Image (cartoon, rainbow, N blue to C red; front, side, top):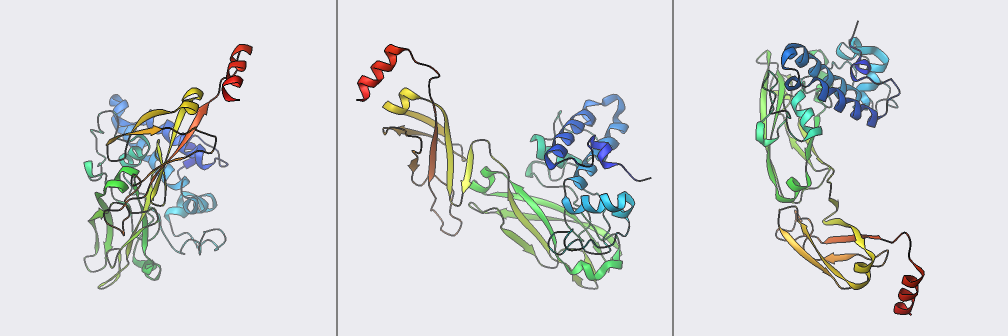
Length: 332
């Protein structure tokens, strides 16, 4: 009997994407090997199973295949889904899924680090401080979905597409990322690992695609599929990006400051401290524009967008009659 991915995460089949994320966090924290030193082997296996369950259920295409055919169908030779079920063109027919992701990397994507002082176990941490991913499975589909052999050669001509998730800071300053994949070779008769070193330029946008021609699975002697990395932007707790502009909200502005002016300080994405003086009256739709403090423009070296600042003004819940009269007199 195949694995029950829903049972592993403790959710039902109607679970939403958010439910699955919450369940992964709960189970991964519970079964992290560093939290279970007395049950290391069991914890490592459960930790891997939890990562695999999340990898399948968080991907709508893989989840559809699993719901219809179970683990055996997912990892066997599942038939193609109709185009209406598989997104743009559906899942390629005859694919085989094999989880080769790095449980540590999935954990880091949620919690920001390997957690609990490092794994100290058997799972590789990708490319360490470079934030790279571990082996991402076969090259035959999306998110670690491999061809599982050379029988599906015709489908392997389609590019292998995977996400490269970056923080706003990384997209702002630029960064070098190392991404590791496992690819199959007809000529060698085995799978090999390959590491891509990706130079992310300041100002790149979500959706940017990096194509490495002929660097994927070899489907015929001397012929291999392309590998495509798609830039994805991780949510930020303080800033939002809008093209080349950055949007920042000042929260908890006192009404007296909104009416009379104030100065506040903020830290930019490249760790600089700047002061912003507000002399205008902050009305409900008021925005402050700081020129040249937005995102770098990748096609215009040395140029940046603007910092667009909005404000959340706190209004008093109640006022005394005398306070109301004083305000009325002052504003008339």
